[in-house]
Length: 107
Image 1 (cartoon, rainbow, N blue to C red):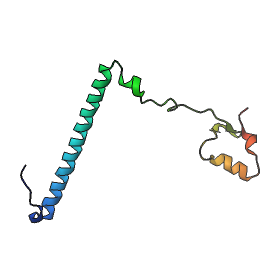
Image 2: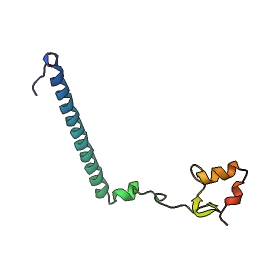
Image 3: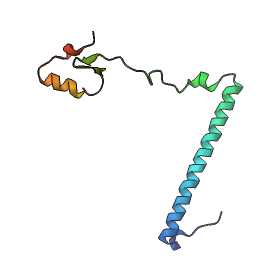
Image 4: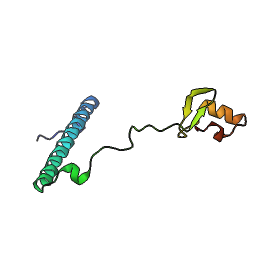
């Protein structure tokens, strides 16, 4: 590999070199990760296992589940709240007027 004298380079040349280095480093990292992944898969398969059998899948059982509404606006039944996150405006307005949370629970 040829030596590069960075002290004689202009700012533009140094910035170009930096961008090339960042790309080269990212590519080298990806290659090494891919090679390591392949080695691990080979070791696991030679031992008679699958990668997912040893390390599990990447699925989350709770992801995408919908939660049933616990509270409903009596004035507009399409406005509901699950009890998670911020209270909706319709509920906070009614609570400010003296209503109780239990008054809006789904029965």
